[in-house]
Length: 201
Ligand SMILES: [Zn+2]
Image (cartoon, rainbow, N blue to C red; front, side, top):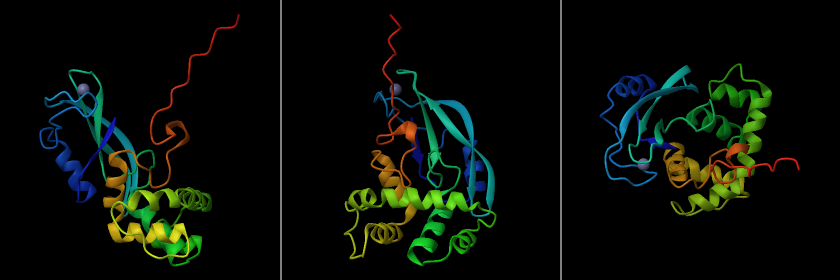
């Protein structure tokens, strides 16, 4: 299970603070609700592309002694299952969809100079597909503004709330993923399990 680590600061600061297992240790298990602190359980690494950062980061893991399941503390500037950080994706989407820049100019404004054309197209497609769902989910936080369509309404709401704050809210109860859950986690961010295949008769 992934939970978000509320962290406002540079990636470098994040990496420094990570060495202290006590600092953000969850005091109870979010999965079985056992009411005792979780035990530090190493790290996993993932890649991250952010403004002025392109490399790997460590994500701290904790283990629950009761249910034996792990909880990882994903920093909230990173999107689950996406290599690119929220800030660069936000800059790109706003530049393209709100300000009408070309794909290339939008990528440049997000400091993604060498970004392949197809990746930008994919983000746009994912976001367009999510827009209506995002508007509905974020209406709990802010009154939906008047806008010609769901895409610009969702963008305006995200800009007002702040993309990271909105992501934190959406993620908390798996309401929605900013760009939609990947196929293996649909619907709604849950791991899908396939029924066992019956052996051939
Ligand atoms: Zn547990």
